[in-house]
Image 1 (cartoon, helix red, strand yellow):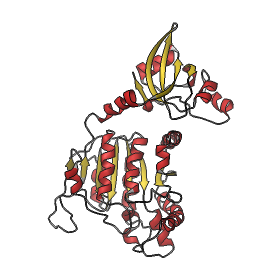
Image 2 (tube, one colour):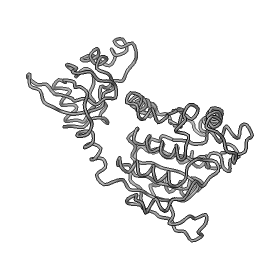
Image 3 (cartoon, helix red, strand yellow):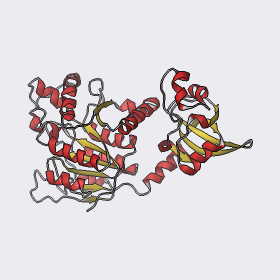
Length: 371
């Protein structure tokens, strides 16, 4: 079975692949995963890695046993120790720069921080680096819970507009029964819709190293599916499975995206996202946005109306011969005060006008929907 063609994917790698059996960081499985990443990059595709393993690495560095239960504060301290070692382990595997990105759920809920995180990841990919994302466990509290990085991977897939979410674990995929207890359990190669019956197939956490089980991987796949992103759960310990993924084949379980999900996203932006202000744009900008699908740039902005913050939705109004026409809606990279200062100016002037080098776009094309 083929997996959908993809240009950009988020690859989630679990703790049991980075620190097998809780014995510290190991290249036992990472070497083959790194080869897969390299093959994908050589074919012109982009990857963002969501990596578990910081707590496990910190625990191993201090010689602590994995089975011991620890408080949230203790896990935070272990994450701070292990974060450096985890990044070192990844960096040694590649000939190109790796970039560490630490996110908490607040970074995905807060409008301005969401925009900043999205811009940072876009720029890192444009620079040819390999972003390696982890939860900011050293300062997070609520996020240190079952399945944090599975669900984080789904959020990151939405954040970077990924075409595919890949979740590598120590199982071949979703089974119709627990393969650790039922020897003849059968692999489920395709899930068209995640419902209560599918969730019933998921067991509890299967590793003493990580914090996630199959249920949290299903939650991640469901989040991705609702935004039009397919998910593959596959065995990261299998060289054959990784080779199949590189060939575009499904070696595990493929979860199909929700029907019309991409149109649903546009519908949500168009009908459910409340706007906090608007910008008037000239005829050239209107044509670029409306006909060529381009981002909205500062030179094309004629005026700013209303008071809004970066990350708020705003209307884009085309002006031609004095007449106004609602053109689009999108998420602003700037607040209204900043935008009023840079409207009509070139991108090379932004830093001098604002005192910092802001985004070259007012609204990125990924965050625009035509009305």
